[in-house]
Length: 457
Ligand SMILES: *Cc1c(COP(=O)(O)O)cnc(C)c1O
Image 1 (cartoon, helix red, strand yellow):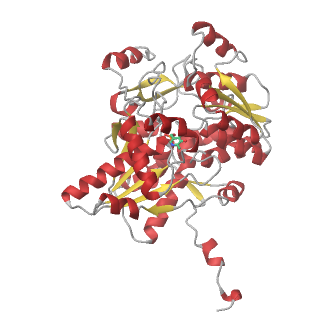
Image 2 (cartoon, protein in one colour):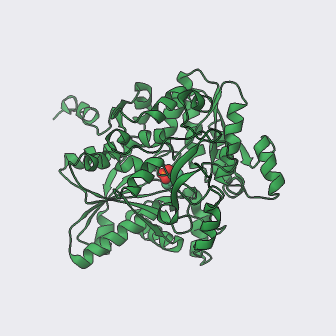
Image 3 (cartoon, helix red, strand yellow):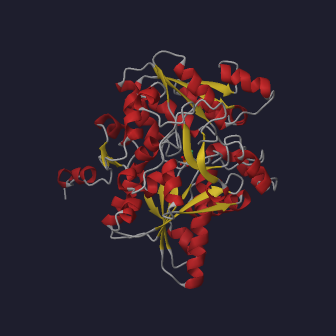
């Protein structure tokens, strides 16, 4: 065969990359509870939300009815640079475990930001640009979201202002430099740049900061600057919508080979990667077309689904954001200082909270030393250095595969490998040096934090 005859074109045409995001809310009988205005206790209107968020993203946030939402061409063009992401059969892990189970992982770490966060960052930056905005503000904890948003903003020529949780700002200087490479400005939070930051500093001098506090600062920075809006990298329904690209691709690839998964596993911080991965499969379950087991994995040190309460709560420490009904540990909850595995948000996506409450999804929590042991085991056989967050899913995938070994069941397990751990080597170091321990909050600690959730009549 000569070169001209090789049908290169078929590879592009047969790609698994979808042209639509899938909105799981359309298939939910009970819709997730609406965001509430903390002042009036009434559902937030589009107009109120538009003061903080981009207009088109508000429309997506409030859209409970459209099942498929077209992905704009500009976003598809960007996705094509790193998507479809690989769905990999973990042959070497299976062999090592001597399990009859088949294990697949969907790897989202193949882009510079190193995680799935870029899938939503590029969408959010696009709609901000479409609206003619000058820039966007956000918070970042470990730094993955800030990095992804910096990349997306530089692609569309938007200003990007990131409030980075102070302890990460100091512990992860290289993340900060990646963001600055893409042109973002990065401020350690709490800062003296905002009124809410000054207030928090006065109340808690010397604080290391938290995600909830950085959110308050970023929101204030957006609403006090003309031409700016605030964007968030997880928790919100719009973010789960954008992340559905993960699940759509996974389903297309599995369908192509006639593979039906039995168990789908993902780590859960705010719920965006898990929500995105399971969405199209959950849609089938909701419509009664197929059944799957879905497992959310969270850290034992920040167990919002497994030990939290399903109530309306504040999304941030400064209480400037709308109230969301979700499984929460209380907005003042902070995981123990030795917690190194990420996934430290006090609440959970309202969509996943509702699905979990209805018994459509399971949740489990794992200790961080067990998570890092799984991370190391995975790295040694499959090659990829996983993010600690992703390793929560690895842990439970391995445990489920080992159960299959006992029972002899040939289950098919799919899990989300959300990112790489190159910026988490400080945490790996603690693990290797035997300096990592497992602090699990007491019932009293959780109850104390939950007592401060808002009272709604
Ligand atoms: C942010 C992040 C998570 C957790 O966020 P979700 O919104 O729960 O998906 C998981 N893995 C990686 C690598 C991340 O960067």
